[in-house]
Length: 254
Image (tube, rainbow, N blue to C red; front, side, top):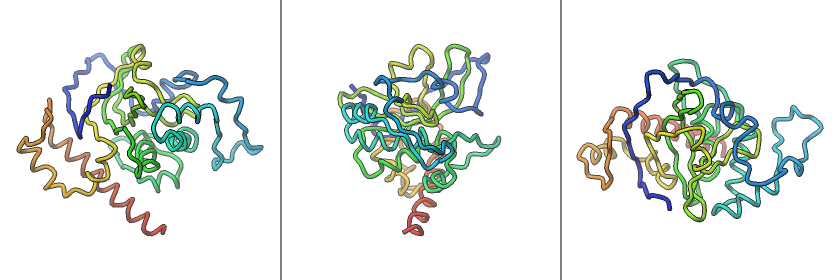
């Protein structure tokens, strides 16, 4: 069963000095290309592709994958639609060194590209009004086959039985919703920060000083194994900035 984590959990990260840190390629390029998790067979056979293959407004369909999402997750059809967009409509685009701009979902939809956190926020935006059993996770991915490690952000879902699945975009395939147990042979994930789906909007609206006072006074009911308040504040300031721009863009669109 899922372990309930109300908001954040920090753990110590130890990465071997011989581990290579790599960040300019997507998770899909490293782990999903020709692989990934395929819960249904022959998903490509039921897709109909447009005559103009360069039409980026077109998104393929897989009725079998949609049925699998519906039977596996609460709000499965909405999860299928959101996954379809981050898997097929977006292209991975790494940011320049020392740049960490978090695009709003509106900006990502317009440019149809982004990096890992951009796809996660875009996925979240499609499900924001639903009571999804899930969370956004900041952390590290370590490739066990070649000792490659890279910082990453991903969305983690829980199915109707409480089993965890990781959602990854950019693969252009029906293979990016992966059971956590499926990943253990090839990779290790080290979460450093976990933010639950139901609290993301609330956190973005909190006054940053009011939010951090109880953290500094250690008044929350969970344990923090590593207290890096500067890193926490950086994430929350960026969340507030991104959601502030997003709300303004949504108002102007309406």
